[in-house]
Each structure stands twice: as C-alpha cells, then as structure tokens.
Image 1 (cartoon, rainbow, N blue to C red):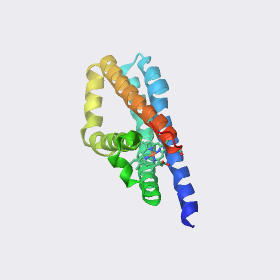
Image 2 (spheres, rainbow, N blue to C red; image 1 turned 90 degrees about the vertical axis):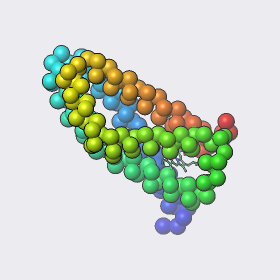
Image 3 (cartoon, rainbow, N blue to C red; image 1 turned 45 degrees about the horizontal axis):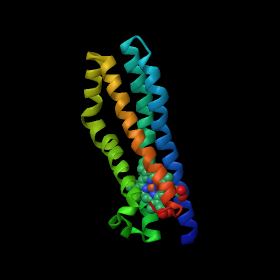
Length: 160
Ligand code: HEM
C-alpha cells in the first residue's frame, strides 16, 4: 500500500474507531443509564449495568487503541507534530486529553479499583451512585462532543 492509500486507510480507521467508541459513550449516557435508573430492584439494576457496561468496556478498549494507533500514524505521515506548540490547534490537544482520560479509566482505574468501589457504593446507596455515574458520563460525553466538532472543523481547514 503506498503512503497516500495508507493515509486514507488510517483516516477511515480513525473515524470508524471514534464512531464506535464515542457513539457507545453516547448510548450509555443517554439511553442505558437513564433506563437502569428506572429499575426498582437495586440488585437487578447493578447486575444489568455490570453485564452491559462490561461488554462495552471491551469494545471501548479496542476502539481507543485503534484511535491512538491511527491518530499517531496520521500525525507522522502529515508531519504535524508542530501543531502541539500552537494554541489554534487546541482540538489536537483535546483529542489527546480525551484519549488519555478514557485510557486511564479503561486500562488502569477500572481494573485496579473502580469496579469494586462502584459495586460497594451501588449496593450501599444505589440511587445516589447511579446519579453520580450518570453525571460523570454526561461530562465525558460533552468533552468528547466538543473535541469531535473541533476536530471536524479544524481538520477541514477552519482556523479558530
Ligand atoms: C491520541 C489520540 C488521538 C490522536 C493522536 C489523534 C490524531 C488525529 C489526527 C492527526 C487527525 C487528522 C487532523 C487533520 O487532518 O488535520 C485527526 C482527525 C480527527 N480526529 Fe483524532 N486523534 C486522537 C483522538 C481522537 C478523539 C478522542 C476523537 C473524538 C472524540 C477524535 C476525533 C477526530 C475527528 C472527528 C477527526 C477529523 C476527521 C475528519 O473530519 O477528516 N480523535 N485525529
């Protein structure tokens, strides 16, 4: 594959991964958690959350990796490392920050202590814990959408 084709391929992989990853975060934040909050039995609520979010976590780990690999490849092919020194490319910084945030949660905090901690909190006070969980997801989704829109405009030549 010549470098033009691999550039197009990497771009397509980047978008494919972002769609599955951030699309999944949008589904969890706007559909899954609000529906779970309506389940009266707290044990059922927690069990369903762990089953569904657990499956999504696998998908999110794969797509964050794909986003990272394709993103770094694009930076290298396009020779645009210098953008990290210019504030007008804030959306490039934001892409890396969003990626770092999710990577930290998915690969470090969740397997290390977040899963067990959440379980304990959800059994002690389910309503409060799911409220906090929902808020955290909405914050992450909002930052991701700002990043998406900034990157879309920025990548197509709009200068902020
Ligand atoms: C380490 C993480 C990431 C790196 C290194 C990276 C790198 C890149 C690069 C180099 C481009 C091409 C820019 C250009 O053509 O001027 C790009 C485009 C883009 N990225 Fe990322 N990115 C990362 C994470 C993300 C995240 C987390 C999101 C979404 C929340 C995202 C969404 C996008 C979008 C929407 C585009 C524009 C594609 C287009 O319209 O053609 N990226 N990224």
